[in-house]
Image (tube, one colour):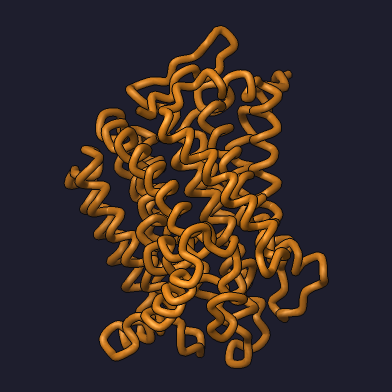
Length: 422
């Protein structure tokens, strides 16, 4: 009989990876009629929260809180983290619309604890490669659900593609997830140790990229290509001819299939519509107006912002709830002070992450690729506004952070003593 620890080590990565398909399953409704419970599950991505809280709970049981104070936290980063926590908490409690502000702030705190827990757990109850496999397995289940959902839609012509598609509501929001999985898959293909693993990763990445194109998520397509370019600049495995050749072949195969596949009758969907928008006058799909509106709101309250999720209250544009830009999103929520804190943390992280990925490669490459794709997409879309891509980003960032300076240093209890984020 396997031990409890053995069982935990086996299921933990798949619990994280299967959060997306579980979210789809629990909110399944091709008829676009949901129960109140399903709406709550969809609005707050509760399977994602469950997966993260499970990891946090296991990490705490394994001694997370004893280990974290002994990590080597650079003083500027520690100050920025504390300041950000205070700003986020205060603005949430004083926000005009507390309903989204408070739970969204709690979610950010959960994401942070999840990231810390993943750093702590890597090398103890899981390895980076386990999380990569978990994400790929989760995507395989998600892809099956995707096609089953399309088959189950009773009338494509009258279906609500903007607010009724699976767990994501808006069809293009699928790109946040499948774009990250495409980048992760191409990274996994580049570092695979066997032909079977390489083929699995290539097929997953190619399918995910095809879903990006079919849904019309042109921003996600650009992000995947950008991740490939940055990945080649940072990670030696991504510079190999096999890696680039495999990625180009996968994207070409995806493009060929999408060109002949039936397209949904929705003006924001499909490869043809995406190309028409990109070559026409609607390149930004109204983003410049959204960004200017958000900037005007930030100018009125620049220092500490309005609290998370307040765009509809302070910078309303139709039914939009986020400014389609992570920089404006942070400034709107936590002001310029919060933006400086986030920038300081991000720079300190990047200074350590890039050399670590370049030196170690391996399972860090897929994590870096997925994280990079989400980061690029967040510069012109809401990729870091919604819980699922936030969770993937946090997990991937944590996997890399767990390997600072070649390896993490552990104490006698197995806790990470030195994260080396200096």
